[in-house]
Amino acid sequence: MNKKQKLAIAGMTCNHCAIAVEKAFLAVEGVESAEVNLDQKSALIVYDADKVSAEKLTAALNETNYTASLQ
Image 1 (tube, rainbow, N blue to C red):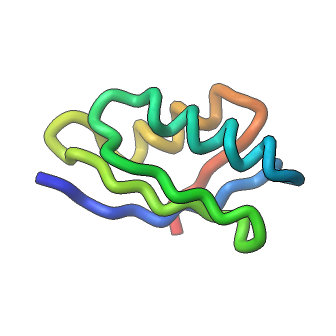
Image 2 (image 1 turned 135 degrees about the vertical axis):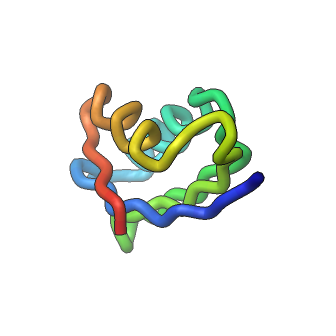
């Protein structure tokens, strides 16, 4: 079952950062799409709730130079 989750992203300062965040989310099994908005410091993630949870998404990004939190 696909779900959408908006996450607040801290640590992004440029387009390169936004691309890195998008790639980090897309590398997580179960993520269907990731739309990162640099200006709003957020990401909209569409994922398969049977394969991954919103908490696991934030944990996966928090292993990088960026941090995510549920909105």
